[in-house]
Image (tube, rainbow, N blue to C red; front, side, top):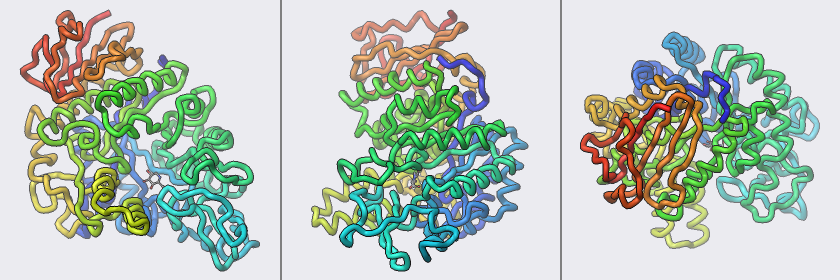
Length: 543
Ligand code: NOJ
């Protein structure tokens, strides 16, 4: 186990999707002053670090993940003064702020791209990935992550440009030293302003294979994901810029394997502090076989930490459907499921990331008509389906479950109009369950999801040895119960979780727990011999 102490290993991170968090000026869109208003709430919850999804100037083709100016704030979100004020208040409360860093691509409305697309010989012509047509077609078979070809033709250059995401998100050409210099300068500018680090968007996609050959399948990532060059660039970024500051970095790295993940986070390689892998959230559910896989994934990734790296733990973010709906029970056992997730997040190895609304047990929205959706990926997939003449109902149900908008509906603060998010018309409809699921209600109930989060967070803060302790799965082959221990030289923590909606007889599983001290449980009426649906317990025993 990696035991070097660092503030970001001990921190609890909270992700804010600014558009949906809190609207302060009633234009229906969340903003920076709205976040400032809610800092006391976050502090009280025990949050140490706030991660903001992109707040830079953007035409919002992909809600801010398409940046047209890295040095200014999106108008709907406020001004640079509002940002400075927010940062100052966060620091005053002894919290930290990390920003999203989107440097695989920019917006097509970024001045670099506007210039680049004009001709083959201007200052920015080589800032993006341009190729001649091959027999009038795109240069290779790569597919965009948002449907269709990853190439779009540009009349003025008579060439195609690459975009792994929407056609309004052209990929930067990291082979060009000038791109590197400009981006490194921008990273330095923000760090110098006093922010505390970055979450790096699809950072393992920045290098593409030499010659841009066809992929095995149009949607397979082997030619542009986690290539050796991406490690080299990150190492340079760390050595030349990031290491000057006491900050944290977490890389979003889809498709990454533990072997490659280890390279990104191994402390001796100087690349990133942590990454987000996707193996556990890409499972369809956590029943039976998949549950065994889930446990296996945790053990497999733990090795990365044992070998000198550090992990992140998350179940939710702005791209994932709400985990209670996807993996657990969002009806009868919504609160118990939410608390079980909290227990895992805060006791499994690595730094925990809570996504807004997770701490009150928010669930999927499942809009019923395409007009209600906003997410570009959902909308593109819908029209793809129409073009392919697939049966709309079958497809729509799937889309509904998977849509990123499930995570993006406005934060539910109270039972007031629009859940207290805005007094205007929200940019995305509020989930109709807001009268039941909201912060105000959750805070006032001692047994709520929110208060369970709080207890766990404070427990973690008061027992720092848990953070640096070893991990062992004690029941690898069991399809219902997750039972693991974390051991330090002071304590052994036993965590036991019922992943089903059934009563579990612990004697049948040969589990005896009465020797240890029960610290936390999401039921008041617990029974030594049985686990209730989605029950989650934490025991402690001195070593
Ligand atoms: C990953 C981000 O989390 C997602 O929201 C975005 O659409 C893509 N990267 C492209 O930036």
